[in-house]
Length: 449
Picture 1 (spheres, rainbow, N blue to C red):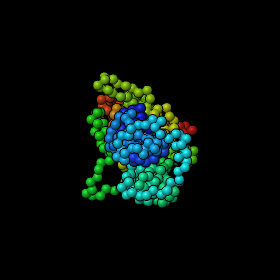
Picture 2 (cartoon, helix red, strand yellow):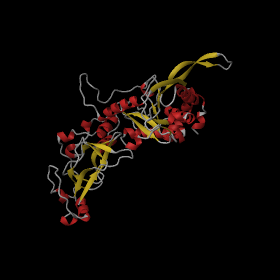
Picture 3 (cartoon, rainbow, N blue to C red):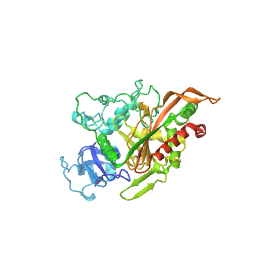
Picture 4 (tube, rainbow, N blue to C red):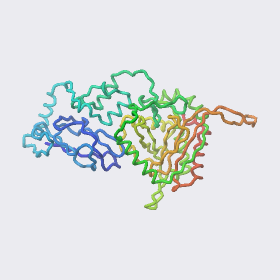
């Protein structure tokens, strides 16, 4: 009895995918839930597990091929059936249960009788086949792939090998200063990044390019290049910014940071405050959370705010993940969603639907030390907010007697890239000033209760 495996539906919005690499080869025994193939969509790369036990008798789609959802990609056969399949991977004649197929009881007995796995002989060619998922995980945890024993075919390193290596090797004790735009330090899972200080700096990428080197363009970088050109051409980009005094937010963060981290397991950063104030501003200016379709002649005002969170993948690419219904969340809930989403992105656990459907976006280059940023609007959104570095500066303040004085406050800038087809400059400025006013005047203590 054979099992035909098809290109899975990896999300409601996904209609096709590209075979990145086959983890198993023809003739390999595959246990149910073993990783069989790696598939890439226009949003994310995903490891696909086998739906059943069997021997991989046919590979119907070669690596590098883009196919529609539902297209057959491989065939699993029982052990005796696989013996009749040519090694070249040609199509085998299907056999019925009465053609000598192994019964479920016999197959279970066969599996139970197999000896414990032995060390896998190393094949240099197979050992060198490293999937994007494995490379990203190794880079995230600063793992030297040469030090990792491979359990895959020919000593190939799998995701389980990397995870096992990370679990058994103690930390080196060094400080990893790489930052995440989603608010989480790369290389230190679960440790939120504290943005806005002069000591926050970004370490060099894991593999530093050499002068004169020519590299193949990574697929994620190619997708970003294509999407950014489309985005730039599809909206009338304008940029507006305001200066924000974060002193009141800083005082609340300082007073609550220890209790918050103990209760939530992650640090209280500036981003949840900014996102919470932004949700309130969108309620006052709903056009910012709208979508224009000139071809259809429609202007859609969304019922809720699905917040797009730009997340840096250790300088190897940028994705925008969706936090649905962010306008209904408290400050704490937004903080939890930001932390969880960034961690999931770094662990390559986001599905295609997690990267789709956002109606307004925030990008956070502040941890990298930016002064002001003018991001590109992701279509079909009408705007995207950038949050830049927050640092101490002298400011003019009004003294109790009404005179002017100088004080040291935490100051930062908010920038809004907006589509002039959808609304005008007056709306952009009023929207930003609404966020500014909330950050500077709200009773943030109440928000944390």
